[in-house]
Image 1 (cartoon, rainbow, N blue to C red):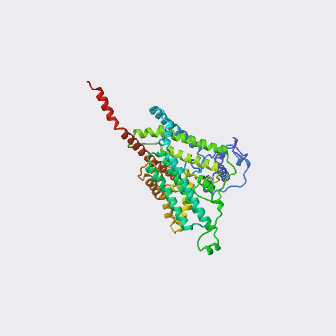
Image 2: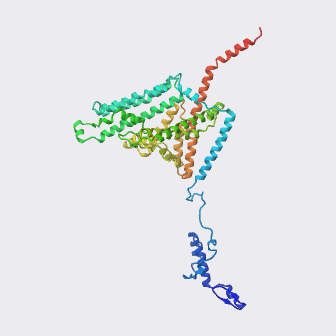
Length: 494
């Protein structure tokens, strides 16, 4: 009986079946080579090569042996990581981010609907306006801000006097320090001794004075450096002291006003400017500020105030919303000022949301403040042979004290909660930085941000709200017994 066995070979008898069923060494080598060529992954190639190194493989094969109808189906697996594993290089998480955003929106919409059903519509912009009026349009906060021009003009006159040689550098520096000291003490004294000042007005005026003090310090320091840079050996030999003459066209009130209004804390003679003001961008930033302020007012009146009213000891307020909205408001305001003044340097913050440590977050959260601290505090300490780690610690403690000062003073309540919370975050950043890195470090940063200083700030506001309403109730309580007594007397039978 004839039987076809491949390669154009026909056999006749059954006694040859045993020899045909067992392939020859050359056929086995061809099959091994074909299997190795199909599994083209690197790991599969290494494994197949390790298994069949001892077998001889022919270099020339017929076309019918190199191609196969099911060649693409023979090997369907390769070594690869899961997309969400830490070893994977996958980075396209946009869909997951959209899902998280939609989930957060739906969850908080449910909470807002439940709050609306329970309390009704509580948003009233008139209450905010009445709070800002401050005792029949007396406006001590506005008068406090207007009085800040005295300190700015004083700094300009001191620089002009030093430029004309009327004051020595040492005396001018001392007078500048006196001016800055009065600038810091004046708003604190007014806020503490003026009962008609509202908490919101006191906070805004105190922020204004703090920023003004930092700017004026940078103004006198930078002008001092300009004088040092333009000194000549002839001037040193003639005067016998560190003194110089600078070009007086920069020491003008217009130049100082531009610097005070510019979104920066560090002074220099010539700021980078854009070619023109883009009206569409200006209106866009203005609209952003209006919308964000309305949202913040709505969250406070509709969500936070009812929580304060029903709880005197414990509360749970959406501080993360206000914190993120405050950052976005700061972003819109700084860009609005930069566009209005054609200010070119708009690097106001880094990608702090990707920070893997709290130290990285602090360096990217507020670039103007970090730049001022590095220029006028850290560098000055380094010149006095202070170690780098100690200088960074002093800068951090100074920033923590400023945050405590700006929140506690307007609310007339100081418990050092913000300062202690920031010090605790510093300890977390130092002792846990080796254990939380990468995505875990970023998660720790977000956890500290949501449970750290924002929670301390809302605790201050909660205590101020409770104490304010208790004072209001105590001032009106003496009238209540008299009214009840009069009603009881009127109801007694004659």
